[in-house]
Length: 211
Image (cartoon, rainbow, N blue to C red; front, side, top):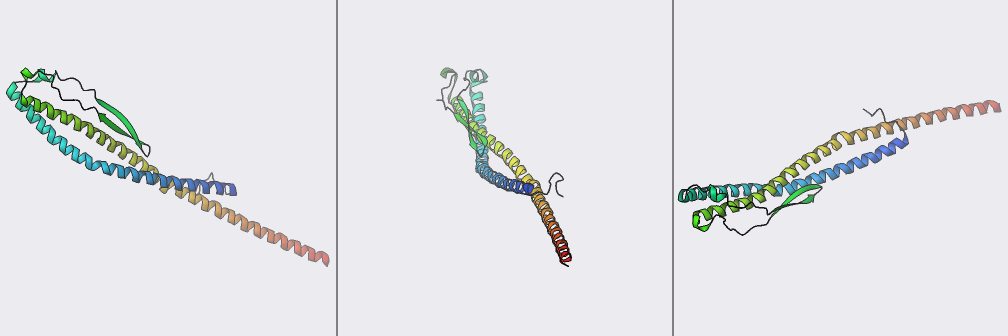
């Protein structure tokens, strides 16, 4: 059904054809953006699985080491409080087709236990080292998971816009183009018929005048 606000004029036909061309271009750009984002996301999904598996194993190893340290030293919560707060994490962003993807950088610090050597042993040192590894892997996993989330959200939006252009906007423009074209052609046929009638009447009148 043609838009009631579209009047069948040559100016509107030209404008609608231009809008239709822009809509097709927009659809192609949205589809291209979606495909690029999908490729980017698929490249990260394998990393997510590997990182999760690795971090799960490292967590298990770290907690086992912590249990052994607790068994040999007693409760070590006081020693844990001696570990300083880590401030070596920095966030920056890169753009992929307009999507801001986080880039986490971690200033890896030299492992220096702060709890005093006289109160520790190798089991506690090993637990500390394991949890340090967990922290470093968590930074990488957080970056990848957040990137996947942002990409997936952008893909959904791009798909929604592409579908709207393909299934609603473009068909409406093309329907309106047909409506205007048909109306203009009908108007031309009517004008041609009118001119023929005028010419025939004029010719008849001229013949009568000659007689």
